[in-house]
Length: 345
Ligand SMILES: NC(=O)c1ccc[n+]([C@@H]2O[C@H](COP(=O)([O-])OP(=O)(O)OC[C@H]3O[C@@H](n4cnc5c(N)ncnc54)[C@H](OP(=O)(O)O)[C@@H]3O)[C@@H](O)[C@H]2O)c1
Image (cartoon, rainbow, N blue to C red; front, top):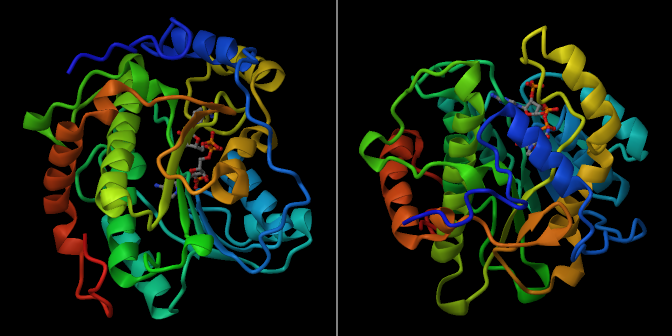
């Protein structure tokens, strides 16, 4: 299927670092069809919330916001333990914040996290799948995958498979109490080349020039997965889980931490002056994760505070089916016999 939306939101696209920055800036200043943010007084007292990549940038801001509203927040982090958790407790005034260690590029580590959550009989009300990175060049994970493929897509694929199987995300709740999962994607997926299913999950080497291309491709994997998850979980119009995704827009975060020394002096002031703060970027995440105003809906895609469509490639159900089946083979060895086999997809 041809991607008719290859230039993304504003006709510039994300083919390279420069066009991605220009795209981000143009999107940033567009006010069209903006949704109002969630009232800061709206509470989620006692709701169990999990945020991946919660020690930095967007994830940390989301964790603080959820904790301020009264959530019990589980911060899944590779680093920043315990200081990031202490910072979230302090900023939110909520002591109900825990940190769970996991390296999401390593399927063994993802499995240990799932085992831990299952053993504690945790039931999630809200999950924000946020962890992400932009490496300088291709890196292999312990299982030999390209690192962005592993963190942006495969870890989320395994986490959701386990959580649904284990009943960590319950699918049998009444309509007023449905759990929600929010995936942090990127508009860069709109400009990606199609997934080559003949070379699915193959490690491909790339350097700085093609980093953005592979970033967009990994987010296309994620966004295609979100569509297929929706099709499989919420079949025949029966809403069992609210599954949403978004692009938070350009954020002054640590995402560019690996950029080369010669770019940093240019990038740093641009990010500081023109990109959104993590707190601002958290608003669409919070809207999807908590707002009653989103209604009894699933599969909303936001670009910042504006609802739009993901790319045609991501929406294509044949792509979703292939992605699901091929990735099922990759995660199968990590699916152990769980206590509750009732929610197998
Ligand atoms: N920044 C932007 O302009 C922008 C635009 C669109 C979308 N996004 C998306 O927004 C999300 C958050 O990014 P950010 O901008 O807030 O960047 P950030 O400040 O660099 O935060 C990224 C988070 O992901 C975590 N992470 C990365 N690799 C991990 C791994 N292997 N295991 C566990 N955690 C890992 C990081 O942990 P460590 O600190 O331990 O590495 C960090 O907590 C990402 O999905 C990103 O793709 C960002």
